[in-house]
Length: 201
Image (tube, rainbow, N blue to C red):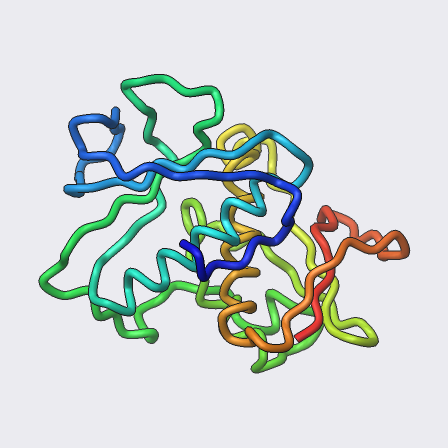
């Protein structure tokens, strides 16, 4: 974890490796191990958790260790700083064909189609909600999160900010040497969306 880059250096975070016996699960499947993720509760801490630990998840996948974010998990030993877990373990076959991904088109996640957003397009999200929207700016993109309808809002209000961090992590990994993130005061409101931040790639 020494190689990961945080979205916000002022937010402290941590993790523990747990076995499945130490985790309460509401899923039909389980993995041998879980990364339990912790953070202090500051502004944008959920985006930061998604950003930091999706880098770790991508690394695990690069060495043939499968991983999956698990929103419906809790710890048997309670901790107020616990945020979410990532299941991981050796898999017989973690190769997936991109053509099988159910993803919004590049035109749907931006104000106009841009191949540079392919990494963000392929990012995973809670119930495949894909809440991100990238609006072109003079020096990069202003990034927004979709406001969900009333039925989805209660379930996704915690997970979608994490999803935004995950999407931004994909953009960072694809543009590691040039990626910059900042929060602007002069962003433009977009109806149906909440501003997350701005990036330069």
